Image (cartoon, rainbow, N blue to C red; front, side, top):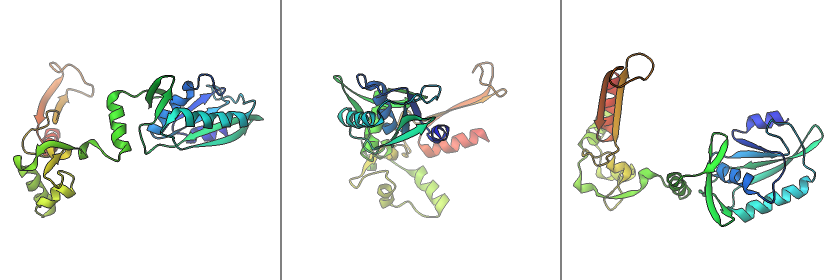
Length: 244
């Protein structure tokens, strides 16, 4: 039964026993599972997946619930399930992916958000924390407004491509409905990526055709290489032409 449960858990951690004096050792996994795609913590199982068992499942379950409430903020969604394997009592802590990200471990004078990297829970770098904050407020980088005013830029390539693909003209109201500008005419980050002018420095594409199936020296093994910069439609067309 344990093997089946482990196979169903995309992310999982194993703990031989519940660490109460130093709960950060497993609470950081609760934080990372909540900030990601969810996961399961198995208590009473060794790293080689052998059931060791817990001496007092009820007491451990109460301690798990209490420590999560006290030290993880905001409170994540989780389910505790008692299990038995080979006569050993175990606990499975199923943590759901959260909507109110980031979920922090808050205790011992620190406030840290964790993410999963491979099979480890590590402290989230600042840029990941920023992404989690946007996710928690139902926003994305594309939808954030900028300092750019729509009337100061042209969108000839966007409008021409839209007409070519749909047979319809790109109306002024479409900029708002497509999330390229707000009702006050201020461009979003997505809008800036669609202007004819190269307004976003990192809106670039590097293409290289290698001699063979492995990447080698750009000077000796590259048959052709190009660098493109501009709006997303230009990059898509240029990249496709390079491949052809």
